[in-house]
Every structure is written in structure tokens, then in C-alpha cells.
Image (cartoon, rainbow over all chains, first blue to last red; front, side):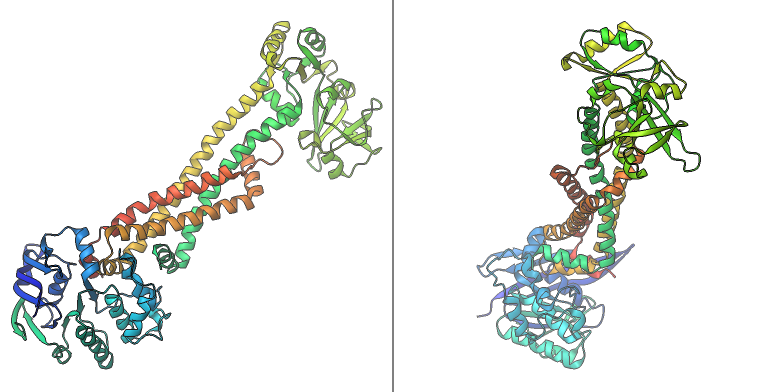
Length: 233
Length: 386
């Protein structure tokens, strides 16, 4: 039986530029089940990043409801949550992968992966877990290397390892292969598939149609609206 | 990895900038440290020096009593004099245990520009100097014998029995004093009668030091002496100490102002450095928020960075002040109206604690704004920042 993880109702995000109002996302209704692998496709300006940011609670919708269903059955209204609770929610449930990697140059690959654990209140996390995660993404031989000495693909794999080190329920990736060549893009998407096969919900916003089509569900966005939802319930 | 190591690694990303900021803190703290250490050392040495003098009361000519007292301490030419017969009147005052006649003159060599200070004394003066020990020889043997301080003997390479010239006449060295650690090391001591004659001031004195038999009655005895003769100034050494410390206090206000400005400049420097670092890392902070850091986590991280800069600067500044204390001491001595001999910078544990504590407070205050600013960044805005 599938279990609903996110429930989005008329989610809208309006940006104001002077007197002009721009709708980044326009009245999206959507349900995302636990363990789904979703690709968000669409041209630049379609609202993919805005949608992902709101799902990951680093941006808030102008209107609408965003509900997250916890394992114990509790429904969290993310649109009505205080900032410190949102920090906690992100820490416990969301993993983010960005196009620009955002690795800290002075830290080694292991230390970069450890970063979310530093902010975690869960002291039970094993000390060497970050190393294990790096081995999972195929970087067991690059543990002590700093970003400067890693290739683009390796840097993104470190970023993926960082996003999953706190065992989130959802992995959100915003154009994760925008700065990578075909070979490395392939590796990253293989990783997403592997993580999804282990039960993690994965939502990827991308321009790369071919890679996006590997997902079980594909959502097409245009002008902030869902124009097609392939593979959804 | 913990917050502390992360903060250190962040600071090491801009090594030159961090080093310069630490140096600015170190300089400010070393000035503060030196001043605190100097304050403690100065007062201690000042009291020690006045205690070495062995005077309880000093009688000096009319005029500014503190200027005269300072001349007695430093040595030099006096503008006014006391009459010799006052000594007999003073000795009659009840409570006066010891007294002596003092005369002073100086002579500057026209070629070397060196100044010799001549101190005219008689046998009575030895009652005020129980700690004097002779390295060679002893007290005057005749009217043309001289005793010299240890510094004079060493710097001029004068030995016992050598002839030295003073105010146009020759004297035989009858005694060389052991080091006293005060102004006596630099004096030529001549028989008072010879010195007054050579100075053309026969029957005149520059000061009469007095020892009393009961220390608790210094002020009453001073009053009695004042009543006995009005043409002189009677100052207790307690008053001299108070007056000099008063002069020092006004100088101290100026130095405190300089220190305060140095610390303020340094604090603004720290604030600027950390704020710049926050601006440069805005996107990184956005990422940290996206991966779950709280406002408090970011605040703590930035605050640690400020704390590390200030504490390192504080410890380095204290270390530099201890190492360079002699240079700093000479510099401060020039600013002071009167500086006693001996080591004036007395750095004890309390001075170290106060200085480091000051650096800590500076770190806490300078870190508040950048830390607040960083912690209040909204993740989405931070990530979007170019």
C-alpha cells in the first residue's frame, strides 16, 4: 500500500518586482507518496526550483497548503510552522543537492559530509558514518581530499553524500547535473536510483530530459503550473 | 569535527586577513597589558624608592614643595635655598629623631654634554642610609675626598684612589658604593661644606631630611616644624608620594584614552573582518541552513570565529607585552612626570587574567552583530546571493 508523504493544495508563490507580480508557482495541487522517484521537467523559469525550494522548506509559499505526513500518522502543516521548527524539519527529513555543490573548500570530503551531523541533535549517529556514506557514493579513496582536488563529478557525489548522511526521508536535487559532463551525470542519476531503491523519496528538477525519463514519475511544469503528470496516481 | 574546528578552518581560509586581525588585537591588548602591569609596578617601585630614601619628612625651600622633593629624588640644581641655622631649630622639635644637611649641584660637560650630579652630605646622612655598603673604601677622609655611586664607577671606570674633577677642583675617590638600585648609583657625594663653598652658597642648604621617632605622629611633627620656622616647606613623604601619584594619575588618564582608542579600532577591525567573511560566505551559510543548521548554530559558528581571533590576539598580545616589556617600559617612562628606578612593568597573574578577559569581552561584543546578521539570513535569499 502506498503512503502519502506530501500533500500540496493550491500552492502559489508570487514574487514582487516593484509593482509587477510574478507567479513562480501557480496553484499547484499534488500528492507525493513515500518512496517515489519524481523528475520535474520544464524550461527555465517554469518554476522547478521554486517548487523544490518550497517542498524543502527553504522558501515559503505565498498561499496554499503544504502538508507532510509523518511515520506516526501526524500531519505537519509546513506552511504554518515557525522557523526553528522548520530548521528541525529540514534537518530530520530533507536532503538537498544543488547544482553548485556548495562544498566548503577548507574541509575534506569527509568533513563536508559530516557538516549536517554537526547540526544534528541525534548524537547516536556513528562517528565514521560519513566515511561509509562516501564509500557508498564511490569515494572511499577520496576521503581526505579537499574540493579543490576533486573533479566536478566527485564534488557532486560528495554533495549527494552530504545530503543523505542524516538519513533524510526525502532527497531534493535541483539541477544536480547542470555542471557535469554526461558520464558524471549518469553516475549521479544511478546514485539517485540506488537511494530510491532503498526506500528514499527522490525529487529531481532537471533540464536533462533523457536522465529525467529514468524516474517513475515525471511532472512537467510550465509557467508555474503542472501541465502533465506522467506516472502519478 | 566540531564547531570549534570548523571555525578554525574557516579562519584559515583567509590566512593573511586573519593574521592581520589577530595582530591588531594583539597590539591593543599588549598596550592594555603593559599599562596594567606598569600601574602595578610603578606604584610598587615608587613606594619602594621612597622607602629606600629613609626620610619621613623632607624640609625644602619655599616654592613648590613637590618640585623640590622631585629634585631631591632626581638630583639637579635648586632655584632656592634653606638657611643652615634652620637645622638647629628643627632638631629642637620634639619627635625629630634624625636630621641631616643636604646640598645639591650639577655640572654639565660642555663637550660630552654629560651632567654630573653632586650631592653634598655630612656624617649625619649615613643615619638615613643604613643599607649603604661600600664596594671599596669608605666615608670621606678629608674635605677633598669623594664617594661615588656604583653606576658612576662602572660607566667612568673610576677606581678607589683615582682623582676626579668637580666644579674646578680635584677630589680623591675615598669610597665606592655597592649598587643601591636607586638614584644614589648615579651620584657623586661630596663633603657638604666643600660643595657649598664651590657652589658659592656657603651657609645654605637645599633640603633637610628628617626621621621621626613615632611614625604615627608624622603629621603632628610636621606641623610643629612648620610652627617653628615659616620660611620653608615641610612635606611628609606620604604627601610627596600622594602628589607624584596624583600627577601620574592625570598622565594615566591620557594613556587610558589611547588604550581605549586602540581597543576600539581593533574591535572595529575584528567586526569588519568577520562581517566581510560572513558576506563572502552568504551562499555557504544558505547551504548550511538548507541542510538543517538552526539560527543558533550559525550564530555560534560566527561567534566562535570572533572569539578565536580575539583570544589568540589577547594571548599573543600578553606574550608580546611580557617579551617587549623593557621597550614598552622605556616608552612609558618618557611620558611620566616622575619615574622611579627598578622594573616598572610588573606582570602578575591578575594582569594576564584581566588582559585576556578584556580580549574575550572584545570578542563577544565584536562578534554579536556579524553573528546576528549571519544567523538571520533566510536560506533561500542566501543561496540566491551572487
